[in-house]
Length: 240
View: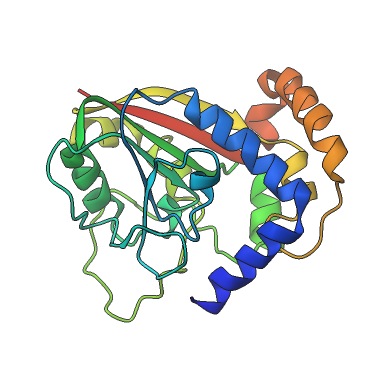
């Protein structure tokens, strides 16, 4: 296993607050999905299987718990194979996101759902991600431009702004390029619990028993504070 994945797996097992936070994310994702078989792309060590054991999990890097190694930009499945595709913190790592969306549209059956949980770049989260997170935030990138593949690119290379750009400033161009993928919902999440949890780092500033009440407080405040400080976004698309 890649040592970075091993470090994340260690943090997952060591941090009850992290598991509780992601349980809430997976619950929200599960509520958006269609009935049928689910594919998790970029599954890492297969967290979604803890919540839905029937999930087919793939990643470009080898790890225990995966069903196969595969690139999100070249999915090794027949057309219409899945009712759902789930990706958690993966889209902003994909070198050529347009290639992935073409593949997602191909392997989803009509009425199938694509659920993406990603960083949201808002005025407050931008400062956090830019100064305190190791992955870059380039809001000047154009994710609708397909650049030549880089053979030396690392699987962990990223631009955390890609999802916000695709479904924000570039939204009209995305919809024109992928009319078969209708945006069902675009929800801002996470005001306090996510940054306080430390994510997959070894530290956490929020104990496990406080996760649920903090998340309930967030739900009440998100309509007001979400545009300025949400740290996450959940985007759901449906194959037409």
